[in-house]
Image (cartoon, rainbow, N blue to C red; front, top):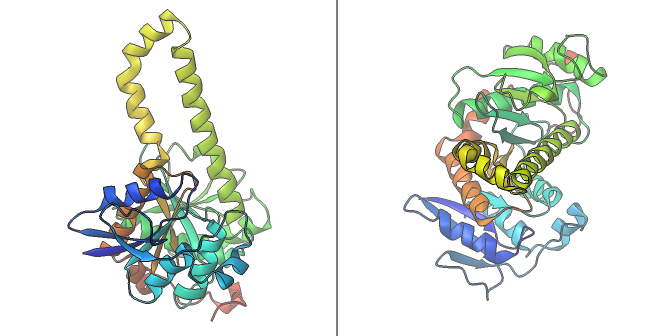
Length: 331
């Protein structure tokens, strides 16, 4: 049975929604372990007392260092201590990253952990990495993100030989800022199946399997996509409900509309892997519903089952060649 530690106090909808999601993910193969206050109704899940919480507006590093009994820190530490096989949190993303670096720590040779998000694109799922862990990045970081994203696509999405592209302002090789130009050269020489640059307008098309970028750009692109999809679906719904003709038309297109909504729904995967750590950590969206939390727990369990951490350790280059630069923070 795969044990998944769940931060019961993370998220915007309150612990009841997190608990309901954990209970929904419980199965003979998955054991969600809730970390939260002792008076929490765990709905049949195992509960480990963790009375403190970390708010979204708190300083991540300071909160992680001072609130050792918070549900977020205790859930992450459970992975480091071997009490859980993976952790899931919908709490403060910066605090999840800080706790993971402090307690779980990086894999040998990994410069920076990165957030890998699955985008439900039209032609098939696409991995966007990094989606917010590193606002500032170096070219060699993006090179490693490409390797990590390729392993993720193979092990979780079942893509045998994933294509990797670099997010830029144009598809031509010479387009981009200094970071993307240097990263492009490294990826071209990496041995990955590198397809060159891609633009953000292609993200929902699914033209490639892995899209590499820095965390600032990736997070902006991801939130723009989420907001656009949500606004578009709401606008269509409003138009269809605004008149009798619209309602009649809505009845005709309802089956197709529902299929599109299910495909574009970010709750399908529920969360994103924080790759490059010695253990498995999944970050869920702060506004996650019980459905999204349940799917995030299943996603974490799937990562354990497919030995994503071990695969990364086996297949990631230990170091970036000194001619290409070595991250000063690397071990």
